[in-house]
Length: 251
Image 1 (spheres, one colour):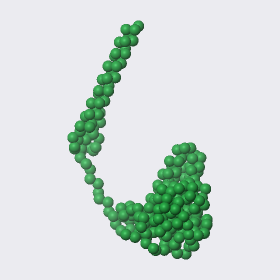
Image 2: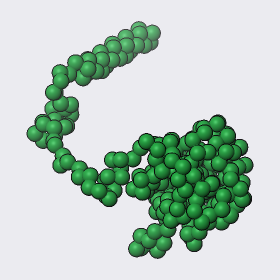
Image 3: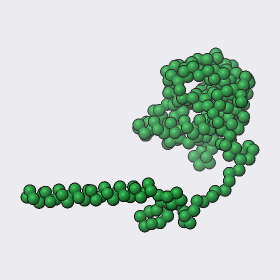
Image 4: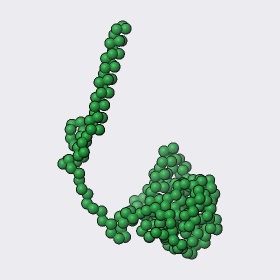
């Protein structure tokens, strides 16, 4: 019995060595590929293209006023001119962040995609210099496309302080704050829902970026802040995810 077990152990060790040697050789062959060689499958077929050559794509046209131009021109901006924003500009930005759209099948929905159609984000406006709007904090009501007053006063300095002293936030005429209510999504998807909430924030913030670019305005997604302090500034029970100051770009 002992000799049988010994022979079995030796065979197992030899098979393991052969297997690892083969894997190492495959990895070595892969690493030693010459420039211009193509990855092949087990049958030796080229995985890159039928011809084995790179395929050129048609050039993208960046025409004025197109979405392609906004995507191409989008940048993060932290320097703003001393220019009062128009209420129409604010309205466009808030609508682009989380307003209503119509998909033609299920009726009104929102402008950004959301897991399960649960839409866990609220959008707060910290207004300082917006024509036709008193300085204060407002919550965007997407169903009526209006602003719900939260607290009056110019809170831009406090917002900048909560954002670890990033002064350009106080210089901007206004800021949009994205706030998450995780339970809206986690109630259906459990802990996985937290990831979906963050995906939603990415979609909404990119909308803000692109619309700001279209209007010749600048913004930047700010994620460095004291969560409790920022939530206290805008008087929310949710979790702030980012603040996006808005203003005319100062080159």
